[in-house]
Image (tube, rainbow, N blue to C red; front, top):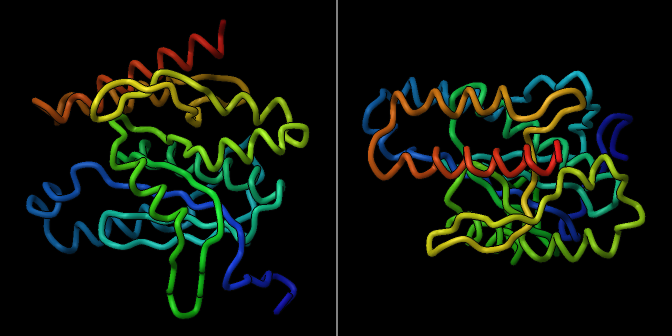
Length: 231
């Protein structure tokens, strides 16, 4: 430890990465002032208050933003950091929707270079997360097979609470639906997707044509999550 509160980050280590993309960012840039864009990105990138039922440590999480891309890295690949990472990105997704910022994302796992001070980030998992997210067609978090493999190998260390967050469902991609594991970010201890559904449906009033596919697809996924959670 460099200080009592500052954990040491290895420059090269096995870790998790989440790649988030802001939907409709290009149109937003052309329709709003630079000041408004700046305020939106600051709002999204700052540390968000945690949900009452979640204890999340942000000391082992690194967030960085470039234009419409948000990257979230873990310090290592321990099971404790994996659980923390999953809770963090679930919370991040929920709060972005609450703030009316539509996102889609993917997570991947493997050896990643993170030079915190020099702002240098590289590694195959970053590319994998980017490419899988590019193909995704709903406001959600899809899991790359590298993370699926980690979940299978660490299955006995993952509690039932966390296993509920991973759902293999028919997932909308650019060229059709594919059976894929996703993260259910809607479910909390005492409720399911009612709040998130309301926020997504509100977007219909500001969206027309082809972009509505993200709204329609997201609501269909929520239906599937509810079916699995309540069934």
